[in-house]
Image (cartoon, rainbow, N blue to C red; front, side):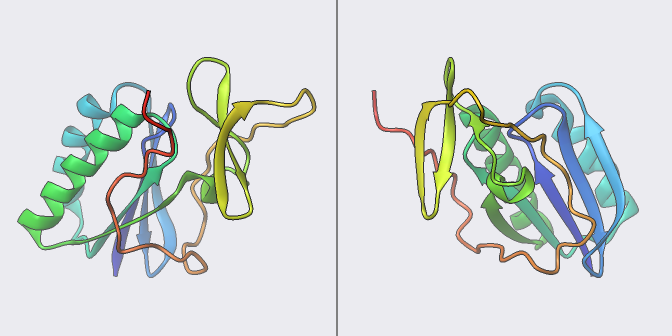
Length: 150
């Protein structure tokens, strides 16, 4: 079974190819989601028989999340590939994720809030896991924005 994990909420974009839940190939791409995803997926669809695509649908760059969702949802429909989603906190050791200005998304248990960082706060980079077996991915794939209306 081939699964693709897509993390577009930070730069570089991270795309992992997993075979039987184990990471077999990793792509780190600098640039805009809208420029990078189409060309990369064109090649991935030629090279692999993809069974599932998983993407990060919250929190982070709203534009990157929207673009990733629309693009990946379209691919999943056209190619009959299962699409699932998860939170970005799963892949950065639950550390804060950049929001707006000097504010960050911070997860406390089951709640995500937007706030300034405390001085001693450590921010971890996003990393693709070596194995995705322990993760609970969600079949509800719509983007989750986590910010109140302005």
